[in-house]
Image 1: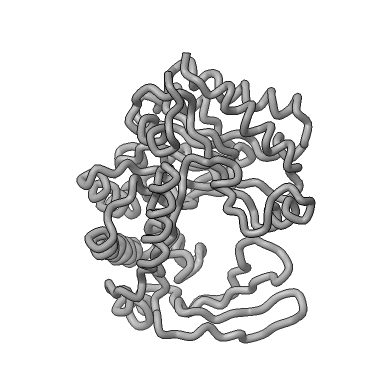
Image 2: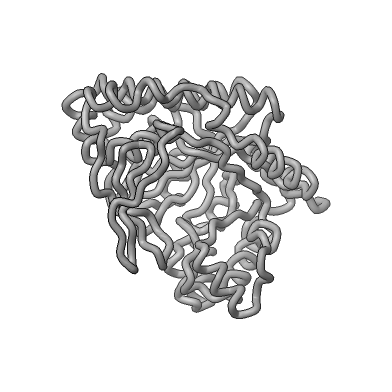
Length: 362
């Protein structure tokens, strides 16, 4: 088979058509990029997707903060961190010298009353929520380089917890599910409205890439019944809109979400991304049950890559990739999360190149 472009390759995999080899994509920490640049292995200003010949270009174009007019305030600050109040009414502690998610300190929205008073009426379609220029530029670059271009962003679970925190959201799912369902409705309607606004003006992407971290180590954040009753209707709404417009849907979820996967498959996802090994996820096992309906993206244990031991990298790649190639399940090569700075540059290149050697359907 002749060599395909990245755009052709990802489109073919998502549509279960033959490919020259599986696509490649990886998220790389900013700290990692800075390390490799400092070592002279990457030029300053180079985009990771182009430098490493990745097949997907993403664009995060939406701002879903509740109050667009609120100017973030620094409430407290030291040499190491700053405590910030943002437009969601959330107080978050950010570390200054390292990457990572912030510490959740407090939230203005803690229940239905807080939601209705401080957020609900603000979450309406507004052109200011869309970075038209970033989307236009990324789309143009992706087309010029023949990469698969995705609108990327969060779905409802990842919209809600920045507003009210995981604890209040999960307590709400148990004690006041109608409140959480209302948040899901508002955020999913907002997403679809902003899609219509953006895509009517700037054109469609090649696909949709949702980020929706619904699990932690060993468990999802909710029961399968709660997922179906509260979260799934919003997933169905957004995924159905994408499918109705010819767009395949990749859904990322950190943590253990295998118990939720039947509902996610029912909701219409086309591919599951990340599949953290340390959380208990195993795509070889899941492939036996779901590989005829969805594809898989990732699940190569980043801890094995970060060992910088090529024998360990080989073993992990062979264990995960070969069974999917045998079953002809759609697959995109990636780690099970993202690449931290303890991964050597040469190891990363080896992981990519050896993985793509194996990721060929026979």
